[in-house]
Image (cartoon, rainbow, N blue to C red):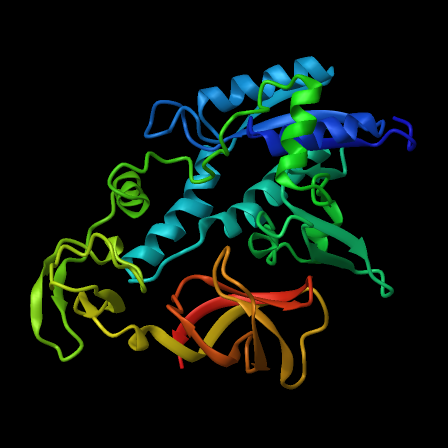
Length: 360
């Protein structure tokens, strides 16, 4: 294989983003191999239109045929269940709200798929993520937000680390979603007007957390619903059905708006508040931090994003021991949620991130 024509594996969900990513690489002269990850067996609680459903496979194959490159299906169902879904259920069972897409990117798309790519003679894995990569003056990868701020997905990528980013290619990071769809239509791709794929690959009827519980044969943790003063308002059948900041679907009618302010996994109590101020916090503690630069040896001023699509808020990140940090925001922010990621930015550059443990 000529070095002038590198082989690149493209993770193809059947969606428009990965389809156009493949098309751009073909146009650049790369030797492309499309691979669709089959994360769960078709028919077992899988939405046919999801990223691992039969519709996604057929659409990805159609795109590969039209653009003239090989397409394969890579079954990783066992690994996906054990490395992504089961840990996600464990988080829900503990009263936290996980973000399985981050672990899926790290362990599956840029883990197992990268290993499979090497077997196919490829050193790189491309995806349809809206993110941009560069190499810094020190030779380390630099991850920057996608140019389409409304679609930026760097929040989901902070855990890849240097090794993961050296394998990664993000061909659509310099485009907007509208530009991607225009390109797909001009190329006559079957995915041009296909709705965005659902990365969870589970039937969401009854909610994603309940779908996870069923898939993992988990045991729900029931308990009571209480107000901020501890008075019982009702009962619930599982803390996994709740997340901090939730307003709809609490099962309790108070005659005015109320939100989940706290989940106690020890006794299963879900606390509601009618005061929005109870949802505000200025401090959080995170662990399991991963850095795209040398970890700071003291307080670091940056911006911190606590959930996908949330704005990054100015803050000071102070490192602790064993990969922990304390984050002090310049202003109170709403519904800091244990289990979600806190990702640190300098402008549009990702510095690192960690997993929210508690509110300070």
